[in-house]
Amino acid sequence: MAFAPYFQGDTSYLTAVKEQVSLPVLRKDFIIDSLQ
Image 1 (cartoon, rainbow, N blue to C red):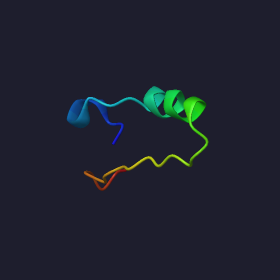
Image 2: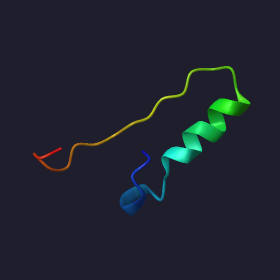
Image 3: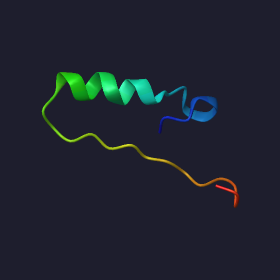
């Protein structure tokens, strides 16, 4: 849920979290357009 217009997220958040924990991280995306 890193899509800024809908969730105020950013892919850099995942990088920052991953640097602090040894657990796997998961990025969740939604398909909202057939061109995706």
